[in-house]
Amino acid sequence: MTGQPESKVEVAKRLGHHLRGTIAETLASERTHFGHDDIALLKFHGTYQQDDRDARKALEGAGLEKSYSFMVRVAIPAGAVTASQYLDLERLADGHANGTLRVTTRQGFQFHGVLKGDLKPTIAAINQALLTTISACGDVQRNVMGCAAPLGDADHAAVRQVAEAMAAELRPATRAYHEIWLDGEQQATSEASEEPFYRDRYLPRKFKTAVGLSTDNCVDIWSQDVGLLAIVRDGRIQGFNLLVGGGLGMTHNKGDTTARLAQPLGFVPTANGVEAVRLVAEIFRDHGNRSDRRHARLKYLLAEWGIQRFREEFQRRAAFTLGPAVALPSLPFHDHLGRHRQRDGRWFYGVFVQSGRIVDTGEHRLKSALHEIVTRLAPGIRLTGQQNLLLTDLDLDGVATVERTLQAHGVTLPTELSAARRFSMACPALPTCGLAVAESERAIPAILDQFEAELDGLGLRDAPLTIRMTGCPNGCARPYTADLAFVGRSLGLYHVYLGGGLAGDRLADLYRADVPVDELLSTVRPLLHRWAAERLDGEGLGEFYQRLMGLRAVRTVVTGRELPTIDLVPLEVAR
Ligand code: SRM
Ligand code: SF4
Image (cartoon, rainbow, N blue to C red; front, side):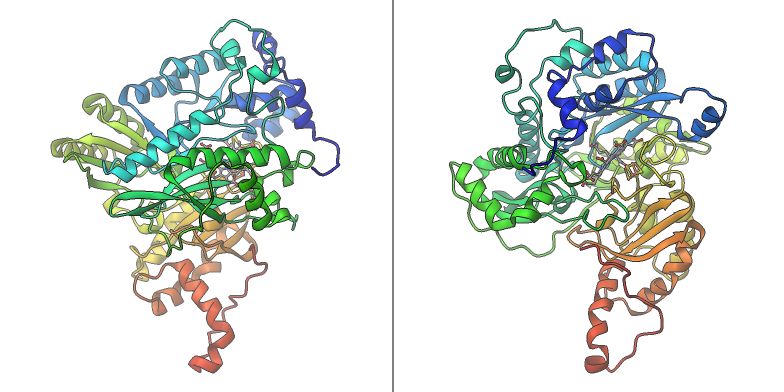
């Protein structure tokens, strides 16, 4: 509690009658778009009002209304859908959206370009496919991440169950969703019975959770508000390290907004994992900042209280005792692309999806390839936290069919991709994102082409490297845990971050500010050359950079070696 007045969004929530607002009325009207309070409430239903940023200026100049449309997000715990659900979503993308499906960095699907008149049929059809958009966005628990790989072993299966249980535990209970989108009957309920956990104001801000494995950090567990990190020994889960207070969103020129990695709060027995997440959400609900949305994430409460006070508050509410967190080395990371054997003898195949966008462009016809594969083989489908897609439960002939079909549609197989491309991610940014100040998804292919050419020349094609790009500092493609990231400052200008890595357990430093897009490669080139010449076996770029930074202090004393004259001093350390 800050003693400050509640923010406008808090007022909208409080007066919104459990997410109803006047959404139904506006839907039924001729209006092309919604007003402020409803825009805030719509997010909880899984949709954002957007406008075509490419057309904005011209429309404004001509005195015309913005070209409004909606992004619709499907929340899919641990990213699993069936073949028929995939085909349903694909049909919706063609019929009601812009013809593309987008795999998100949190294992969901997004539609873009849905017009207001198509919003209700789209959300209704998603529900008919037994999927949901509720709490995909808004001040609630977001899509729960969990390792997508269907390896068929006990620990991966258990992690999926916990992710699903967490999603069910903290799903909003309001009937508003059914009333508005599914023509459910309006019911008179008291506040307490309608939303027993979230009450009238829901959480102070978004709340991101994931279940990870000590054997595989494919969910980027350290960046979450709350992570349950399963401690796996001999293929069995011993319990969870409970991690709290991660979050990557920042605002340029606001030094009091920071990216943070989650900290271990303690060890939780397996049976109490879901309850532990609920308790953290409760503390956040009761004590998070409700006046300044820039400081409303759990990480700021943790920074204000310190871990010890947070632990005491947690323990005061818990019916079980937190143990000391298990000390772990750096977590391994797998992207699960290419051919992999499942425990049951079948196979799964990980397909690389550039920036998560399933679309046909020119010779690269990924959408058609996936349509053919899914129609013919009816595989299980899993979305990964790296914006990729796994096709599961295949026999070996099926795997061969997948590879042949991808190749026939001009899609490069993962084994032929450079590491830089394979591990890359970019957020949507322009033209759909209302917060973008620079290009991202549309810019990254050309940037990767340049980096690939340079890295090929240095013999580093397969060296581990994550390059991530975002159109603003909010961090949607998790740039601050990447080896190398470009974060939009304004059109054509980016901050360059360096020093994270695949394991996701280090924050990157701001290495160079305000670099023009056509100088990104030349800015990093000297470091790439040193990486090529001096890297240790298997050393990623971020790790190499960190080692150089560490060496700076002692270089003349210990090694007697002077670093070349490239300036590696970060301008501002993001920690
Ligand atoms: Fe995000 C807002 C897209 C993952 C931090 N994010 C947005 C919005 C909705 C823009 C808006 O508020 O108007 C973007 C919609 C763009 C569009 O046109 O589709 C958007 N975020 C995305 C997605 C689609 C990016 C992607 O490439 O996949 C991801 C959807 C995940 C999902 O399925 O739920 C997405 N966003 C993230 C992540 C990564 C993660 O969660 O692992 C982050 C950083 C982690 C974190 O939250 O700290 C992230 N998004 C933000 C923020 C900054 C929050 C903060 O604490 O400051 C915003 C802005 C906000 O909330 O005010 C934001
Ligand atoms: Fe939009 Fe910024 Fe998120 Fe990119 S990082 S999708 S530009 S909010």
